[in-house]
Image: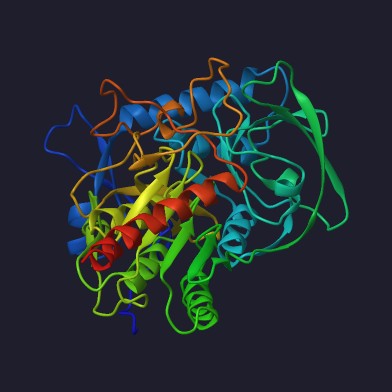
Length: 443
């Protein structure tokens, strides 16, 4: 199957011109403003121009001077400006952040799947803790037992600093880091010591579950994930004698990644139909992705296995296959991250990761804050009645409110570990085959 070129969105990457700031005289002298444009191009500036009242600039300068002059200890200009810039984004939503050069490089490394660290996707929270979105398969974090929904409240015995971001978890392979974990259902915080490694994430793994029935585990969506998915799927078909009777795609605790990778995988399994659409305030954020002819499985049934740690691009893939009636979704309600982030490089080498759009499944619905409800609901083998509020985008402070959020009857999803959910997905996968075969056995 040949892919059409797709824009890289992060979920991808997008080049952005340096911000240009210039003064503008107004017809109303009592309201002085600065005009801030994202481009020197007149047409682009017309849509991307923002007028900031000078009174607000003066307010900032006044506070800045007060801190410089009166704070109990001297504050470095660079540190103070970095704090101000991060603060500008902190009240937007949990996924809009400022990257300095090192942070931006770390982010790029994650999408390529090679870096030094422990192998975990994190969400930095306003209370200076990290929420574990998901540990990545076969990494130190996963082997140490970290789980989706865990809170990291201290690193090496020290509280987490606003400026630290993910850096303390990166480091030379062989070195150790101790994390203090708060976990729902566990009475007291506990320590987990993890040894750093060179993380080379194999984002797709496969095996045969039974003769004719394949299993594909997708742990994250990186630049090469779609190509790996196609190769692994072809290998499964060869192992099955040229044709699979069915496929389980395991997206449990997959935190997402590149939108384009999810779109390309959906295109491998769809012969036609819309995959996903995105809508934002700027023209480049409005996009629609549709399948091209050619189903690599030739219509063989598919079951997608999800849980509360399945987020972002995982939900795009699950939603595309479900809404096009190409797969049944089995497991627990997904995380509910229905927004798209774009990395906007700045002239000084820093970057801004900014939420620029919401995405919509082919049925036209946004899953922001509510996730995807599976058609067949599974529960953990050891059910905990601990009063926990659940693991979902909707509990993140400052999250974008979803169109369907807050409706009566909503229950957050659960994290599904182990092999039992795979067995349940396989049983569900075999149902339509049995139903289709039944009339032929009656005469």
